[in-house]
Length: 331
Image (cartoon, rainbow, N blue to C red; front, side, top):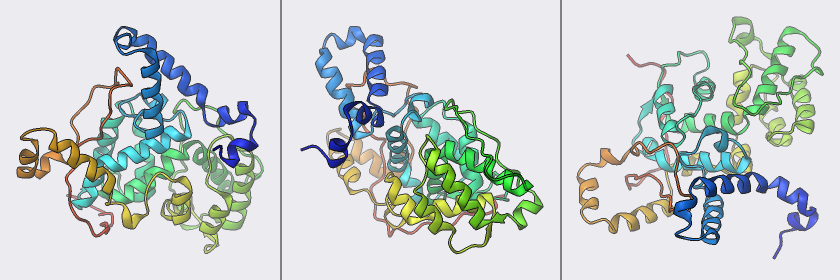
């Protein structure tokens, strides 16, 4: 049965909204690159398994960044994969630096840009040094906002700069490139940190931006709610408010609530099933739990999309859902 959304849209609009052409082009490219191998299985099976992987969200694993960030579904899939692969970091209570989190991101996307990781870390650390330690949950929710809404936040940065300098707030620069080149963030100068901008005026500008922004942006009503309790705010204070807002996390739909962040029963069950099929592996992992915290380095690109893609190994364990706050210093 077709959904009401599907019935309300013409075919071409629905296909464009779901970025079907992007996936068709990618599937054909992979088909041509691997045609000798695919000939053994058949083209029909290749397309079936390719689009199954798209639906399951495994199609972005070990792919180039240009593909990972190409569609909203790809971004959600990458966020979910990062959480599922490395939630053990949060379970163990480990605190990592920005560079260490970037290394984890590169295990899933070898050419993931350092700049995006730095911007996500800055949301958490604000005026602290970039080599300070962060909890997994703090970094993950900040990274979600930065990665999924990247282009929108670049436009917000331009608005904030204009308001801070007293320029016309109706003059908004909207980035048009999706190549991964991002606008420099406002400097955390003393004046900007202490004063910020008027929250109501800032929201009016954001509301106009959301109405005409061609990229994904948070629901305006939730943005207004996040700003409802403050009179003035800084740029990074705004980003922190977005990252901690329960409704925005639910609207995005990539991650569970913070209290459930360390629980993934479906993945645990799948891991148990897979491990049971490998003789001697269960005993090895049980004897050395720390060996399974991080996945091994994988080749930059999966050659054949019809081959099953399994998530990296993790340690099974109980968690009370609690997370540690960000540590501010490390000797």
